[in-house]
Structures are given as C-alpha cells and as structure tokens.
Image (cartoon, rainbow, N blue to C red; front, side):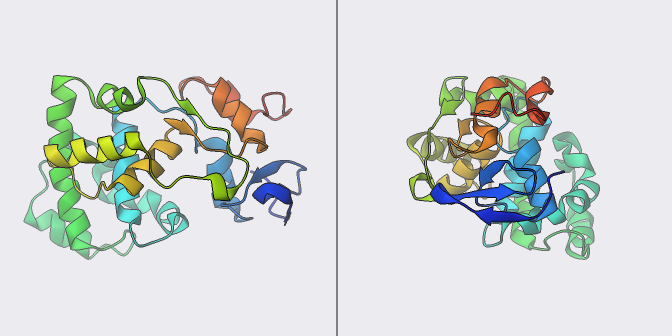
Length: 224
C-alpha cells in the first residue's frame, strides 16, 4: 500500500510519499490509493466480478465511490459473494434482511434492482456469457485514452450509452450511461489513468486480473 502523504502537482497528478505520480481522484486515503493502484483500469474478464462491479457502481449513484469501497466487504457478505445464481433466488425475506443490514447501503430500490439484475445476468450468461456481452461494446479490447488532466476525463461515451441502453432493454437496473462509463473505467474497458500517472502504462500492458504481474510494478518499469 502506498504512503499516504502527497502533494498536488501539475496536470492534476498527486505525488505521493513513494515518489510516484498518481491520478488526483483517490487523494491520499490508503484504501482509495490501493484501489487505484491494484484494481482500477485493470482489464477484468471474470463474469461474476463484472457483475459485482456493475452492481456496486449502481449502488454508488448519489454517493462517493469511497463510501461503497469501505462497505464492499459488507456488500459481499450480504449478497452471497455476488453470486448471481444465488441472488436471483432472493425473495421478500432477503429484501427485509438487507434493509436492516448496516454494512451496506440500505436503498430498497437498489436492493430490489440487484435481484432483478441477477436474473438478467443469468439470461445473458446462458446465451453468450456476461463478459463477452460487455466487452463487445469495445470490440473486445481496452480503449487506450491519453488524458492529460481531469478536464479531459469524460463522464460517458458512445459505447457507455450503447451499453446502458442494451442493459436497460434486457431489464438491468441502475445502469445509466454515466454509471456504465464509470464501470468501464474501473474494469479496464477504457484506460483513463492520466497519461503521466504511473499506472497508465501498466494498465495498457496488462491483459486481465489473471495476469497479476503488471498490477504491482514495484520497480516502476511498466509506468507510462
């Protein structure tokens, strides 16, 4: 985990105590910095992991991501490890249980929407696979953006709008184009690390979480 001390430099980068330049948005919170360094922007192809991230991005609506990140373990416990097969069978008793669980965001519409979305996942998974369905929106390969500052960072894209429209048509909940774009950034469908962030080149080089070598990059060799 990176040291938490840091100072803002040009182009919306933060120089941390370890000497590395990072995107501005995690600030110096150790949990947020670790998420930035180890997860955000790394191409993810696991069907269940993609479901989890899309659901959590839906829960984030109206909140900050760090709020969700701090509750992620609670969400995983409450939602059966985000196994869609299990969630799809949740009923009224589960909704009541979840509404009384202080370890998650207790929003009834989002809880009920998660159950509905799990059922949609089952249908997509059976027909073509959830990962393939999602990655087809970027033709199966990450979009390599070269952002110089936060002003360059988009909040949605043509691909995120298409993804949102198709997911909604199939019955998925809480998946507007801004949510789907944030999801695409997080799971590496687009590489939106600032070009001078040390993670930009590492995320461009790695292919998936199954190939962990680019995640650590402790010598900085993969930095862009």
